[in-house]
Image 1 (cartoon, rainbow, N blue to C red):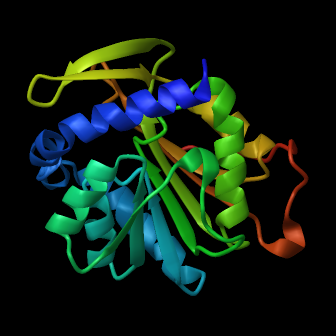
Image 2 (cartoon, rainbow, N blue to C red):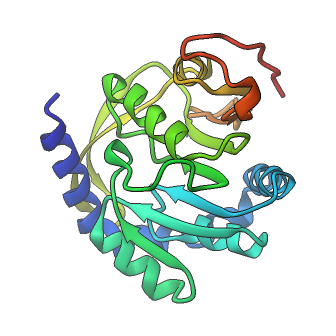
Amino acid sequence: MNADGWLADTRTSYDTVAVSYADYIRDALAGAPYLRAALALFADLVHATGGGPVADVGCGPGHITAHLDELSLDAFGIDLSPAMIDVARRDHPGLRFEVGSMTDLDLADESVAGLLAFWSLIHIPDDAVPAVFGHFRRVLRPGGPLLLGFHVGTESRLKTQGYGGHPMKVHVRRRQPDQVAAWLRDAGFTVEAHMLTDPDESTPGALLFARRPPRSSEPQAGRHTVRTQL
């Protein structure tokens, strides 16, 4: 799949639904205690390393970025969609948001203390994921934690309509946690834990915690480490 094509389709789709999506997702965390617990744990892990800037990559309208800010993290958001960034800035004027792509992450090496990608990997083709994870590792400080959230499954579907009935053209990908963990290990991460959410629903979710190892113990890319499953 041509990178320029699917990126452009994703950007246009979320520009189209930005306002409706923000209304749809605004109170989602209030009814998601396990997601809130995962975010609290992520915040604790960042604080334990000494704190610093935290990137919410694929931040959408900024609701997760704002929640991280409430957890005393120095969080900022990045999203492919300029319209989403406009909404995020409107709704959370005290926070920093910028347009950018996880496929070419415009952050300095080792510049963030933590990185989160909450259901923002679902539109990335499989063959682009390793490069994305390479960017995540590059920008994280040694010892910095990574939290991923994604749909669990084995198939992909084309989403042509969503959030207020607006047209969209994005592929929604479901993945197995073991596959995502393998990609992370190949990128040089240590995978520390994962958990399933809503395992009895038609589309379960996964939360996966990983870490760029401290400099003294960083593995070579491709080296596998032991996984602890929650």
